[in-house]
Image (cartoon, rainbow, N blue to C red; front, side, top):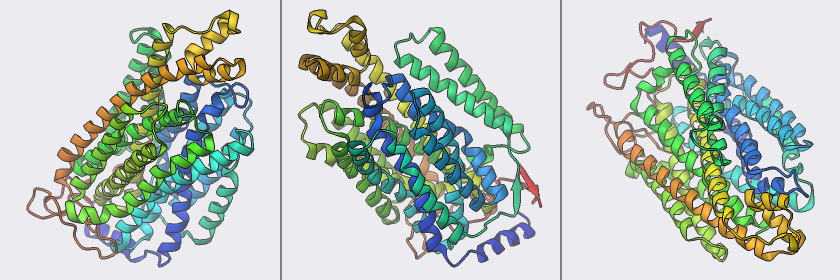
Amino acid sequence: MTTANRAEEAEEEKAVPSRSWPVLLVVVCAQMLIWLDTSVLNVAVTTLADPVDGLGATPAELEWVASAYTLVFAGTLFAGGALADRFGPRNTLVAGLALFGAASGAGAFATGPAWLIVARAVMGAGSALLMPATLSVIVQSTPEEKRTRAIAIWSSSSGLGVAVGPVVGGALLSHFWWGSVFLVNVPIVALCLAGVVAVVPELKGPRRRVLDLPGLALSVLGLGGVVLGIIELGSGQTWYGPYVLLPLLLGCALLALFVAGQRRSPAPSLDLRLFRQPGFTAGSVVLLIAFMALAGHLFYAAFYLQGPRGLSPADAGTVMIAAAIGIVLGSQASPALSRLLSARWTVAAGVLATAATYVGYLWFDGRTPILTVAALLWVQGFGMGLVGTPVTAVMMSGVPLHLAGAGSAVNSVTRQVGGTLGVAMTGSILSGVYRERMTDAELPGGARGLTPDAEEQARTSAEAARSLAGSLRLPELAATADRAFLDAMYAATFWTAVLALVGFAVGVVGLRTRNVSTGSDGGGKGSGDDDGTGNGPVGLRDRGEPGDRAGHGTPLRGGGGPGHGDVPR
């Protein structure tokens, strides 16, 4: 890094606005909106599957309602990060909120699953503009000594959204039609827009980045192909058939082209040099796996609570508050634990705790006490809260300010890609095992009022089977569907636990080379793992380029010139 570049970033540090806490409050509220919408959907899935009170969505369509949002979200997050770096995070935050609100209003009045899937995809694009901008605003507007605490509060916003979402969603579904869970986003967006305009300052880096449209298209199409193949596998297609193998191979090929293109592109959507830092790479993998397991678990947990456990949407949302409270408390406890144990072991403990809760679901049935379910959800949430803050701090500690949007986009995209793959994975396991169990099950025949078409619906969807059981007064049909669903849930939760254990191993091995200062406001160095260079832990206050201090990694750009993909002003 040249003396001029160092001076530029030093000036940025001095120019940090004094209204950091009001700004933090506004961006956290905007960030919380993303998680609020996701948790509301978890409560609404059974209603959307209902052919009378909902849209009659099939399991595959429900997976696409969830996956369309996260797929577009993940695929366009890189563009959102580039836009935040080029036009300033405040402007992209406003644009993202406006797009999210408009799509929410359109989705509320969808007349079928296809239209709702399209609306959810547009909502994902709005969130992709929103999320990188929120973290970029925090990194640029918060003083160094308070930055880690600000990141902890930002991370805990997910817990707040998860806490409010199920309660709000359950209350709305108890009194209004299913579209109300999307329409509620509109007034929240209006309040957030007013706050952004009022308190968030204009923040622009020293350089402007340009968009990589070919790379964006390859990433979206590649992820789409992989997700489509996984969903088709769960819908009963053979793994070697064209409906599964072709989209999987095509998706992987497009993703390989995306990575290869990013290495040569003068304006990459994904700056691969960020991954030269061991902490950034390991942190990305841990986040990917942790959110893959979490999203997959929440997908089948919502069906369990409202299916075999027999709770209403409002009651199921109330139970899931336990996970949200755990996330908030874990996020706030993680800085202190990171100072005591190091970021490496704090993350490892959090991932291991979540894996233990997934294993616990192997013993759940229709009579499991609600207190037991809530206790496991709390532990799961606390473990996830321990993971988010130290991993984010490790990843962002080596990112220069002018690439804060790009770094935060990678941080965000790993969560969303993980969520997309997690829902596709567990949804496919649930659907496949349920179909297998119901194929040989004895169902009430035509003499009891069950037609061949209705029997096929019951063998495909547990929600359809319960709806038929209620309308035709066939309790044995509901009992058969519940038994098949529980077998499917056991298979899904087993592989979810295995996935979480892989994340634990990655955290223990990969994060040992990197540590961050995790003081709340004091800004002191955190205890923990040395970076292996003899220079001690790497702190958040190292805001220069990675590599500009001896032993701290490979520079993101050489020769002191403009960074890869940056356009000098």
